[in-house]
Structures are given as structure tokens and as C-alpha cells.
Image 1 (cartoon, helix red, strand yellow):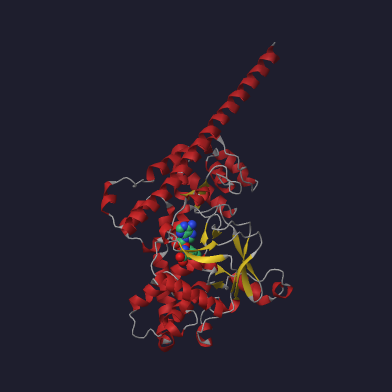
Image 2 (cartoon, rainbow, N blue to C red; image 1 turned 90 degrees about the vertical axis):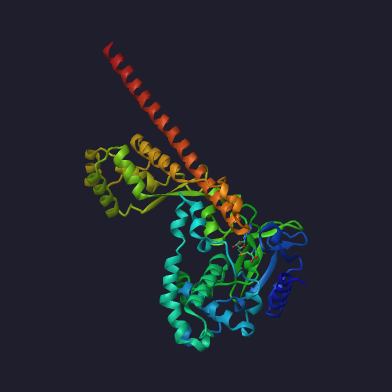
Length: 451
Ligand SMILES: C[S@@+](CC[C@H](N)C(=O)[O-])C[C@H]1O[C@@H](n2cnc3c(N)ncnc32)[C@H](O)[C@@H]1O
């Protein structure tokens, strides 16, 4: 048997020997041909609300369930760092770890942005996602918090002969696994005792129950074909179908409304299904520049208005522009509209708002629309589509795949910008028509009065 299949078989036996129940109607499948690693398929028709599998909480790998000593656990107050430390610890126990067969089906390499070279990241030029990778800050946290812990408990962690560099690499590997595989464990639903339990409440706030849920994390995700969901009970978690599933269909989880760029950053793949959630992030700086140039608002006035918005708790560092036609997310958020309206007000009107401690309404003014058109047009020049540059011919398989995923992110953001521009131009001509109509109406009223 191939290593891949052997690992899957051992993993399933391990689940069975750890009180997991798995419906006969599903199977763990090899989906590598489709570029999706392992996944779960149905073998028979499944009804809505059927139990697919249940995992005892004791098999979920968390800081608490890990075999870390109480002394080490007591030092882990950050959920993210804590789970990384627990995973590093369990990984180093090798066959002595309860979770060894689980580790054997977890990835060791990733396509998430953390692992892209500088050259590869250039393919994402224009997208704000490159500013959110967080490799340096993760590195700093590992050096500050995990290395000293590992070194002061060298025997426990079995890392005494491993270099700092290799420990950090292991931390990045576990951190990336958590990002793509871990669940935020919720408190049990319909359980009054747990609902009223202070420990759960505190933990929920602090998100202390981040955990690796074996098998639940073998489900791939699809925003449109999501057909299963994890439910939380006191002693176990249960994966249930949330619609009828035909025999042979894949069983999908959902990652929530994530733009393609974030799916790539966190999960290392792209799919057209998440394009509906694509956004373009506009930094405040770009809006300030456009207001100065386009609306001719003086620099000191721009700064004064930003200060005022800050005191009114109405200022952000950046604003998302979304796809048109999204039900839950407006294309231009109220916060963005209020900002641009404020920046483009005549000074006298701004003083009036300030005096009354009020903000303009979010309906975009003509001047604000013009500023946003300038902002969007500038952004359009910053997105580079490198999908057909000739160097692609020389790329190895991994880089070629990364390049095509980057192209998908850029294409999605270019679409967002084009839709934004179209919407703004329509608003602009509607505003002009309304103004013309208002002028015509007032002229005809004046004429009537003259007669
Ligand atoms: C929670 S795991 C799912 C199990 C995973 N396929 C495996 O083999 O371990 C998440 C990872 O699966 C992959 N994945 C999830 N959904 C996918 C999809 N619709 N298409 C391709 N890959 C997907 C991505 O690599 C992602 O980081």
C-alpha cells in the first residue's frame, strides 16, 4: 500500500480505537488528483441532519488535552502560542504521542503565503494581502515566547539537540497547520450548565478553546456547496449533514465569507467559489491624497477633519470596497462614505457639523463620488496581472501553481475595482441628472411666478 493510503488507514483505525463513531455512508478519500489532498466523500445518499461522525473531546488536541506538564500549561496564556507549543510537544514525542497517527495525515509543507518567496509575492502586487502575512511578527513571538519555554523544559520537549532555527521552522509548520486546520471550539449548545459556566464564558471570550479536531479537519471547504457543520456537545463534537447529500458527493465545510486573497493566505489554495467575497482594501492614506488633489481640500483641513472623525470614533486605517450585489456587505461601507463626505465638505459646512457634534449622512455627495472615482482609478494602476509574463515557462510545478493562484486573486480584485468604478459612474450621472432636474424645476417655478 502507498504511504498516503497507509497513513489514511492507520488514522481511521486510530479514530475507531479512540471512541470516534463514523457513519458507514462516508469515507476518507484521496483527492490529490483534484489538487485537494484528502477529503471526505459520501458512499450512499445521506439525508439532511444525519450524523456523519462524532469525536470525543478527549481526542481533540488542545493545550488542555495535550500531555504537556501542568507547569508548562500554566505558562501558556496565549491560545495561539499555547496550541503551537502543545503541537510541537506532541510532535516531538513521536510514536509515544497519542496523536501520532493524526500527525501522519497532517501536512508538512504549505502553499500559504508565509512560505512564498519574495519573487512569488511580487505576483500579488497591488493586493493588500501581502501586508497581512505576519511572518516577521510570528517569528518574533516564537523567539520571545516559545524558544525560552522549549529551552527551559528541554527534556520535556525533546528538542535539546535541535537548533533554534529548526525549532522556529517547526513552530511555523505547526502555526500554519493551526491556521488551516484548527477549529474555535464552542461551548456545548443546549447545555444550561455549560452556558452558565463561568469558565466556558471566559474561555469563549479569550478564545482559549482553539483545538485540532481530527477527521472534522479532513473536510475540504466550499462556500457554495457547504453541506456539513460541526456541532458542539459536552463530551464530544458531532459533524452533521445540513442538507441532503447524494452518493459520491464530497462533504464540504465552509470557511465563512473570506475573500479569495484570505483563503490563499490562510489555506494555501484558491477557488472561484470565494470570489463573491472578494474585496479591495483602500488605505486611509490613498483617500486623504485623493481628497487633497481631487476635492482640493487643504492639507491642514484634511488633518483637522480626520482628528474630528477620530474623536467621534469614526476613523479606520483602511476601508474595504466589496463586490456589488452582496446581500450582507455593502459595496461602499457607511464608514467609508461618511469619511469621504466629511473630507469633501466645504469648510463652513464642516464647522457646522463639528459644532453640533454630528457627522454627515452616508449617502455619497457628488464631490465624494469624484474622490472615490480617483481613488479607484489609482488602485487600478497598482494591480499587476502577471499571468501572461513569459517567465512562467521556466517555473517549477509549485511556483507555476502559486503564480496562477496569485493571478486569480488579482483578477478578483480587478473585478471589484471595475464594479466599483461602474457603480460610482452611475451614481455620478444620477447625481448630475438630479441636480439638473432640480435646477430645471426651480427655473420653471421662477418663470411661473414671473408670469
Ligand atoms: C482543513 S484541511 C482539509 C483537508 C485537506 N485536504 C488535507 O488533505 O489534509 C484544509 C486544507 O485543505 C485544502 N482544501 C480545502 N478545501 C479545498 C478545496 N475546495 N479545494 C482544494 N483544496 C482545498 C487546502 O490545502 C486547505 O489548506
